[in-house]
Length: 446
Ligand code: PHE
Image (cartoon, rainbow, N blue to C red; front, side):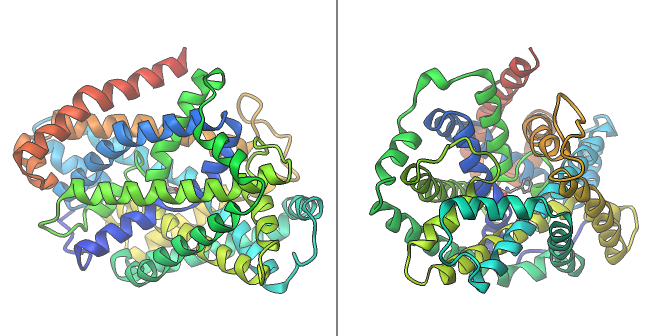
């Protein structure tokens, strides 16, 4: 496979694309319920520490490989391994990444379908006058209805794949330009509203005052997995975007900007959601339904609540859309690297992911009690193992390849941060990120 000539049109476009990949369900849906289930501030503290010490340096490693290879992840790895005169088996890391994004995208599409449902319900005014209990019951009724869920899941796959089929660097830029700023504005409005409610103070305590007794190995592992997930790192998905990165752009600066934007969304969403949780006396450990129950309650208290709620779910949908496009890209690029036309590659990926997603759809009704591993049904399995195990393993291998295997000059050029920046980055990856990820992964095994 030859080098790709496709490029993002500017440095800003690249940062927006990576932010679009990073900001999504991870920040607004997964972060709050994971924080709720994992003891609050302890989880937040660990997650931020992991973002700085592992997520960010490994993100740079991953994009760097794509930029140096300028091919699909699998083909970039094979090409660079050959240049470095090491075993071509490194290309299997690209295949492992493709498996990871396959599994993630399968549930991602289903949950994004929930936002389509809520968008429609909000615009219809279905939430008007409902109390917290009724809003919860409404969500449960939706989950128990596989037909409605299938419809939304299918619609979301079509949305995603129509952009992917067109080639991401063209399709995505305009979408990102509009959506990202609006999303921040709306989250800030929600937080300002929250500041005037009784739940605000306990929410801040829950999020920012660590209770060390909540600390456990499980919490550490969940925080590690979440740091990778939220930054979109460890599945070679950003590697695919790195292939289109413009020449002459400092990678650490771009990655740093993305991480700040990403964590900001999680914090804003967390404050807004936990303010409702505490104002309503709900359980923070409510699980994956947390956002879908709390936000309709929060918006119901605002003037023109349904309108705001509809707008919020529209923005969430756009945010998950840009993430799912990134999730699909490495699979499509890889098939393309094997000579398939882009449209055909997209169709194959779409069909496979849709089928796997159906197992998640059914996990809320017919297959709720079908346990695949350790008592987990398919949805529970696919929302934990790929994130908490596959992403860190992928990230570890990516870090090893970039910081130990790649020839110094290749890596130096692709990082584009000068010799000192390069030395600092490589030392951080070699002596902090790699050992730390290994320790956490091994402690999980034991
Ligand atoms: N970062 C995305 C989110 O937070 C999910 C994602 C994970 C995207 C892995 C790409 C790769 O929603």
